[in-house]
Picture 1 (cartoon, helix red, strand yellow):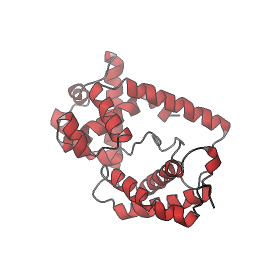
Picture 2 (cartoon, rainbow, N blue to C red):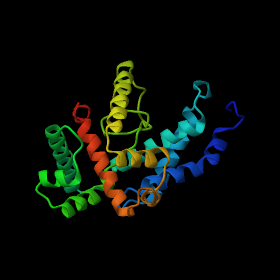
Picture 3 (cartoon, rainbow, N blue to C red):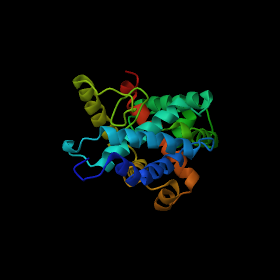
Picture 4 (tube, helix red, strand yellow):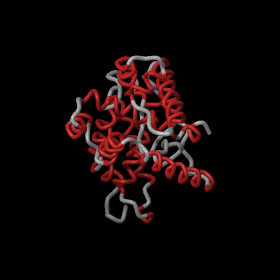
Length: 235
C-alpha cells in the first residue's frame, strides 16, 4: 500500500482517465492513420508500470510521475510504428537545414519566405511541406529527439548514469535558451501547446489564425528548434 492508502489497482483505476487525456492531446498532431486506441493501450501499460515503480518518498505526486511514464510509453509506440513516409522525414530535415543556413547568414530567425527561397520553393509549397510534416514532429519538452533520454523514458529503460544526467540537464538548459530565442508568436505557441495544453483550434483563436495554420507554425517551430540544437541532435 502507498502512503495514501491506495493499492496499485486503485491507482490505476483512478488515473485511467489521465491516459485518455494524454492520448487525445497527442493524437491531435498525428496523421489520421494513427489509432488513438493504440496510444491508449500503450499508455495503460505505462500507467501500470508507473504503479509498480512509484516511490512516494521521492517527492513527486503519482499523477506527475505517471504522466511522464504514460507519455513515454505512447511515444515509444509511435516510434515503433513510424507512420511518416521516408520522404516526409527527408523534407523535414531539408527545411531544418535550410533554416540553419539562412539564420547563420543573417544572424536572426528566418522568415517563411526566406526559408522557402533558400529551398527553391514558393511559399505555398513550403507551407504544404510543413503541413505534411505535422505528424512527424513528435515533440515535447520531455522528449525531444530519438536519441535523447530525458524524463519520458521507455518503460524498459535502465536509470541514467550520472554522466547521462549531466548531459540531460545541459540539454534541457540549451533547449530552454533556444526557446527563448524563438520569434514571439512561435514562443507563445509553444507555451500554449505544451504548458497550457490547449489544442490547435484553441491556439488558433488566441493567435487569430486557422487551425491548419497553427499546425504549420507548430511544425516550423519544431524544425527551427532542431536547427538551433543541431549540434546536440548530431551527438
